[in-house]
Length: 114
Image (cartoon, rainbow, N blue to C red; front, side):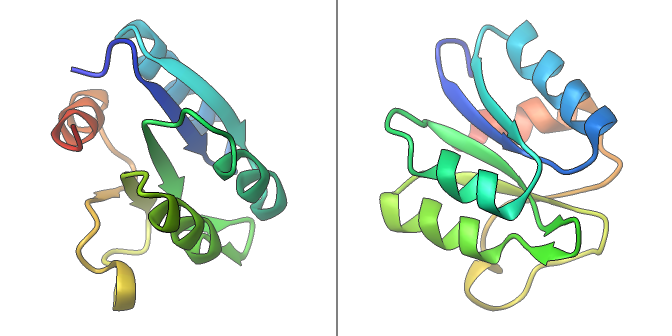
């Protein structure tokens, strides 16, 4: 259940970001963002009160890894959303949603973070 949680959405594709926000808000959670660029995502990742995040791994050609590091350093759990398959290195153990993904799978994965 994600009701009452604040979820940071980092996604550079407007249509995908809008869908993510709608799905999250429909479940009673508050959305922070969406952030569509690395700079904006880093700024929002520093905001207090974030319960979890959905992080696009490729932000207009820039890597999502700096945002992942910022969230991990603060102890904020997150999901990596990518159309490129798996994630390697330091974030290999983070839940990954392959794009395109179904709203039900998004909610299931987000709920598992709590």
